[in-house]
Image 1: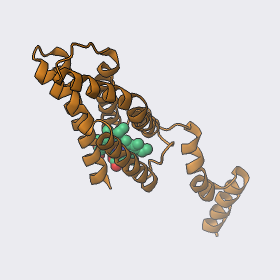
Image 2: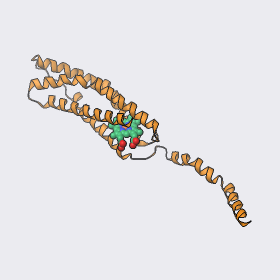
Image 3: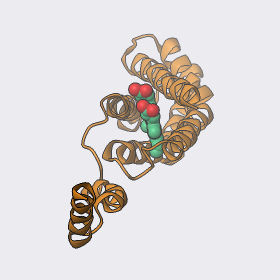
Image 4: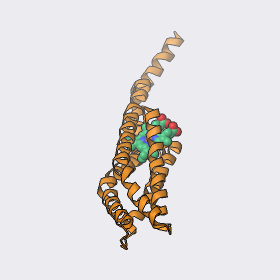
Length: 185
Ligand code: HEM
């Protein structure tokens, strides 16, 4: 499952890099045909492939979390990754899809020779925000910072072991006293 998770995370970041290359090429090039092709190419992968790979990463991450001692909301780094993943998967249909459809339509108009202008800000944010968030998720996965969410969870997890070893103070003292008596006999 870790392999699926790593491959999907890598593929997701790779798609984001392609998204960034196409968006910045489209916005910065002086060649109208290159811009038109770049705008239209966005639609090929920017919605379904991105959504699918984001969901695979989410599902494999959840499976890993549940299958290991990390859990889903036991450690800050896992919970943060869960939040990043859910938000970014949701943003694809909600924010990226309309921007990409608009850009593709704009690309077609450019191909037809129309002189239209496209508001660029909608397209500018995804290739910056998404790789930054995914990079943060990778850093969180590798360094696992911040520890547990509930500090008490560790002591309560240890509590049964401690309790079975020493029980209550009076009982523990009684056992020590018993053992002394045993050895004295
Ligand atoms: C936002 C997208 C995500 C990216 C880019 C990402 C990236 C990674 C990477 C690179 C690793 C390998 C770390 C290592 O072995 O040192 C990893 C492991 C892991 N990830 Fe994710 N992840 C993401 C989402 C999630 C989600 C949503 C969850 C669960 C809620 C999750 C839970 C885990 C767990 C439990 C491990 C195993 C850590 C280990 O065994 O050392 N990840 N992730």
